[in-house]
Picture (cartoon, helix red, strand yellow):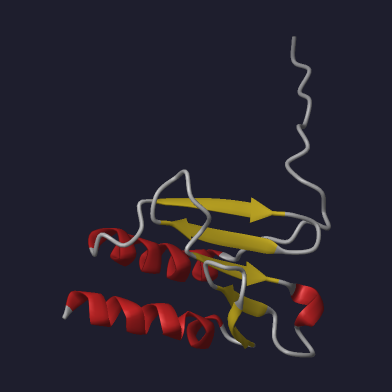
Length: 111
């Protein structure tokens, strides 16, 4: 009865967020919820990229999508911010600079 079977937790090639990255993203999400702008979120972690989507309502398309694509690290930067229509709002090498348009929007909503 002492048989222990290890469960596979994900493929080794899966892209994910680090703890500080996820803390930064969820902090923004919490402030967006407090301002009444977002009500739901979704996480996707695949083999090529990881994404976080923020929704106004659960049944809609995401209002903003933050994507981490390590394949673009040496080119335009591994971080991409997509808007509601799928248009690229910002690209960059650092998460903080890519989240800046959402942070500015949050400051305008509070005023």
